[in-house]
Length: 306
Image (cartoon, rainbow, N blue to C red; front, side):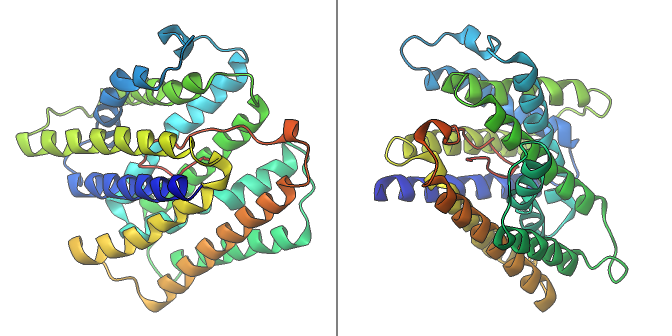
């Protein structure tokens, strides 16, 4: 268990550095182009995640095609939206808004999965939204497109988690992993056409570095799940906010003000509380009802290791 937790922390550290690379690319490239090249190499290398009996055709061989199609579309949309957020917002602020995802999962589970949410989780969800208001402060500071993109990314990621829960254990692990790379590459490849510009040498280096972090972080997380259940590792994703604060301050000279830090603490604390409550409730469920192991889409995005 301890080895799995350490590897998960390492995976999310790599994810955070990948997002820092995205921010460094800045406004020089279309966000869909950044996403396309960032996912193309992981897609090519995705067969390394295959187990005995798996086939490359499992990427498109789905047992529940409608739900899988919805899941891969939502997760594929998450990354370019996250890229937009990281390009225009302070690093830690973008992460904090993306970490609204667990609260949105709770809200969606009420309406879609008809789950009963007790008052403690309900209060945590309300607190998370209050934290977002403290960070964004509508009416008191400029509402940027990055704020909208980050919130949309969190909503898409939450929708992907809900779709994954509805899929259950009907799909192979390789299918769940590879379809994220495939769908994101295809969607971004089509959408990048209007704004395509050939990358410079420096941009190529950054794009290759982003692709490397996407693949390495994904591989580290999968190895981590060999030592600990994926749903037990979910809390480690919140270590990204510490990396975001450090990277933002050291490399981008971004220093959140006191109110922004307060809002970040509220959102992260609410997310951790929701995660802890879900783990407590899960222990009382039959094993057959446990949530499926899924893997986090390689950022720029939040993890969906629910």
